[in-house]
Image (cartoon, rainbow, N blue to C red; front, side, top):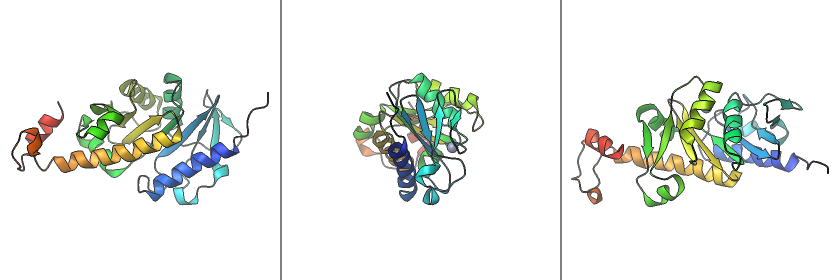
Length: 212
Ligand SMILES: [Zn+2]
């Protein structure tokens, strides 16, 4: 049986990356998107800003990380590959440096989920992986360990990674992770009355409560 053309899938990956840029979740050529199609991983290239990315520049890798055809994959290709190897049901991976989620990844051991909608998507928290240098197998393995069977993980001092059964789901999670991080950081300046506290500026107490 002939393998299906990758062209429409390349268009989806490029479209997803441009969508992230247009929604302020990636800037320039930061972050990366991939999609698994059978035994092929389609991933955004390295160093091409989102607004200039063309569909044909999406890079194809096999499951060993070898480039099929032309182009240079995102420097985080190991991260994507490690997740697909560990989680066969995952079909799409979205990694961004979105500002609020990255801020949480710099200063907190996890992102606690404060609101009901977030809990449906992420559970009680988005865990943070042990720090490791960008682009390394060490980072890829650390992310896989912390991700477990979850839908998202924070790379310490770096940014969030979201996984889904399809690109639409992974994009939604990337957007929601950012919204959730924003909410969490806003909540640091107060003590929501509904949680039994008194409105105030005791961020240490809020942090302690939220990180339980
Ligand atoms: Zn990154």
